[in-house]
Each structure stands twice: as C-alpha cells, then as structure tokens.
Length: 298
Picture 1 (cartoon, rainbow, N blue to C red):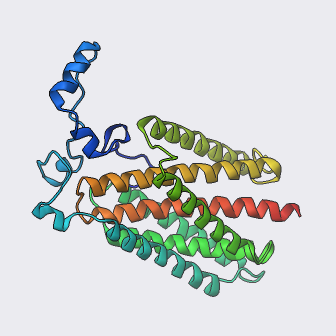
Picture 2 (picture 1 turned 60 degrees about the vertical axis):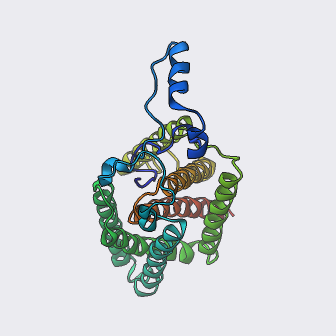
Picture 3 (picture 1 turned 30 degrees about the vertical axis):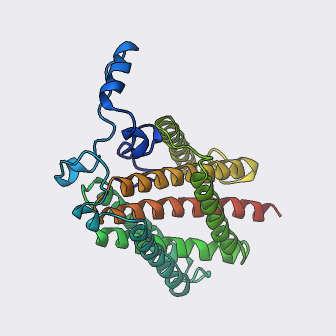
C-alpha cells in the first residue's frame, strides 16, 4: 500500500477490478484460465495473490483469515487512530502558528517566509516518505507538523484580510466532502476500478500542469497568470480541484479496504493516515481558495 494524493503516483490496486476476495475465490482458477483461452486472450495472473507478500517477505496467496498473522494485521481502528494523530498534529501546528505568527503589517513578511519554508520542508518530507519502502512515523508526523504551520499562516491571512468566517466554512466544507465521498463509497455509488484510477491520475496530471503553467506565467510578469486565482475561472478551477481531491479520497478508501482485506501489516496504517492527510489538506486548500474568491467578489 502507498499513499495517494494529487502529487505522487501510487502502486497498483491490491484487488483486480474492485471485486471482493470472496467473490474472486468463488470462481476456480482453472475455469477462469480456460475461459480466457476460449476468448483468445492469455490467462491473467492470479488475482488472489497477496499484494503485500513481496514487500514483507510473505508467501501467502490469499487474504488473511483466522491465522496467527491476523493478530498483527492492519485494521480500520488502526487507520482511524493514526489518521486522528496526523490530523491532530496538523491542527495543533496550525493553531500554534496562527497565534505565534501574526500576519499584521509589521510581521506579515516574516510570517509568510516561515510559512513558505515550512511548506518546502513538508514537501521534502512527503517526498522522502513516498519513495521509502516502508512507513516512518517520524517522517509522517514531521510532515503533518510543518504542513500545519503553513496552513495556519495561510488560514490566518485569509481570515484577516477576507472574512473571519471563511476558514470555518472551508473546514466544514472539507468534512462535508469527506463524509459525502465516504457515504457514496460505502453505498457503492462510486466504484473504484482500474479505469477510474487511470482517469483520476490523468486528470491530476493535467491539473498540476495547469497549476505549474499558471505559476510560471505569474512569475514572468503575466499579471494573474492564466487567471486561475481570480474571477469565475478561478472558482471553476477551484471546484475542479475539490472534485479531484474527492476522487483521490475514494482511491484512499479503496486501498484501505484492500489492505484490511489482505491482512496488510499494521504499520501500513501509517501510510493510510499519510495518504488521507495529504488528500484532506488538498481539499481544504481548494475549498479555501474557492471561498476566498467568492468572498472577494462580494
């Protein structure tokens, strides 16, 4: 299992086609292979192979059920606890930076400088964790702390110069989007398949390229760049970012479900928490952008 977010790529799904392990085991493999031969296609790899076996030296081929290994397997409770820890770290760092790094006229330059530095450190830590084979809690919590500093300063500035209520609205909007995606996923209104996965990655790539182009145009004197930070186009771009974050959240839920079904090691819950935190931060920033633009137009 690896983190999912709008910046980094992911490992493949643990379960082919979004099926449950029990549903796949119901079809004998020789029959499936014969059916593929009749259709003129080569037999597929065994879809029940545990995707965590190679990474952790296990040779098991099916989800962990009623074995001694299940006692050290990842559970939903583990994910909830780790996610609460990382999000709590983000929130605590954000509150402290809001209080200790004021954005008034006398301190705004220093506060912004610290916020940019914290964002860069958070980005580096997230990169390091993303390319590590196994999760490192210190890296993940460090990322959460520095990300919180950045969010605290940005939120404070937005609240001070636009509207005191915009931050609360963005937080509530983030929770609303998360709850909506979770309900839709649990009700199977959203079906996360390989095609869905590929579409989301393609959309994220295009979105990031547009953001990079906008920054380049802004840096070289093109005013507001491509116009994604102002007006109706900025609102539309921000809403697209929220929808993209919601799609990545569905991918997060899918990988957590797969990891639990296949008995992933408990330490993988840190990666699940890391991925959820990255996605929720993304949604919050996009919601803050949209609300800021709407407040500015009033």
